Length: 51
Image (tube, rainbow, N blue to C red; front, top):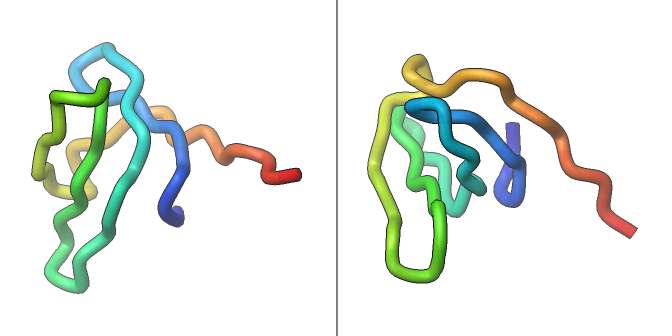
């Protein structure tokens, strides 16, 4: 998984903003909603195609 990947968390789509070495990542739902979650809590990782 990398920054910019679309993931599902709590049945809603988020985009990965940052991945930490301690097993957490920041995910963004919209401009004002950013959450810090464990990587193990993320479902349905969908790789985005760049270009």
